[in-house]
Image 1 (cartoon, helix red, strand yellow):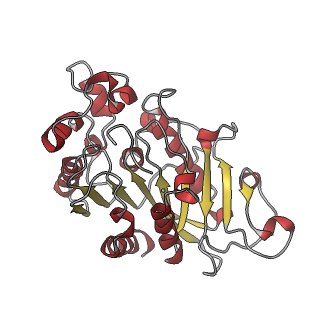
Image 2 (image 1 turned 180 degrees about the vertical axis):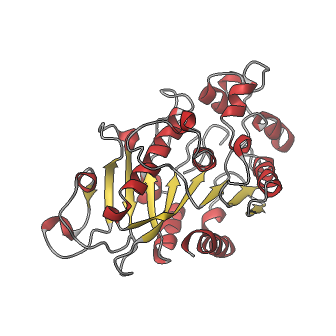
Length: 320
C-alpha cells in the first residue's frame, strides 16, 4: 500500500424554493418531487460553477433530528493524491468509512465529501485549493444547506488528511488557499481530524526508512510528484516544506485529533507524532492515538474506543 492512501443520512432542512447553489447538485430525497420531505442528501454539488468532477461534493444531513442548523464534518478522501473519490465516504464499497459517516450523522453532524484534482494531472497546491473552495462554498451557503457556518471541522484520511490539514492550518494564506469559487468567506474551521495522515513531506522518506526500511524516494515518490520536485534534495526541500501542514502550526491553529498506525509504511506514525508535538508546543489542544495496525486498517473506523474519542473531540471543539 505504499502508493495508495485509503479513503470512505443527513439532517432535516425545511423544503424551500431551490437556490442556484442548491440545484447545482442532485437532490436524492422526496423533496424533489414536491412533497414536504426535507432534503437530507445532495450529490454532485458544484462548488465552483465549472461543472468538472473535481469541483463537486456530496452533502449528507442527519435524519429525524430537526431542521438544524447542524455542525459539519468535511471529510476529504484519501488515495495517494492519485486516486479515490468522494463516493468512498458517501456510499462506497469501504463499508467501514460509510459506517463512520453514519456514526457522525446519528450524533447530529452533517457530513460533506468533496472531490479534488489527483495525480498525474495536478500539482500542489491545486488539490488543496479544491478542498478550500469546497469549505468556502459550504460556509457561504450554510443557511441554504441547514448548516452552522461557525461549527465546521475538516477531516481526512491519508492523502486526504494531508490536504484537509493544509486547508485547516492556512486560512490566512490566500496564496495557498486560492481564489476558486466563493471568496466572501475563508476556509476557517473549528477543528481537524486526521486518520493516518501525512503532515511533513520533508521527512516522509526518512520516516518510511526508520519504520519500515524504506519507501519510494525522490521525485517519483507520490509526495515528490505532488510537489513536482525531489523532496529529499536540497533543491526540492523548500517545495516539500511549503506543502507540509507542520510548517504552518501556530497558536491560532485549530485543535487536532490525530490517529496513526504503528505498522504504517505509507504514512508512518512519526508523521502524526511530529505534527502533534508542534501543535502541543504552540499551545493548541491536540490528541494523538497510535494503534498497532497498518495503513488503512479497518480498526480506525470500527474500534468503539476510537468512535468515542472522535465524538468526544468533535463535541468538545465543534458542537459545543
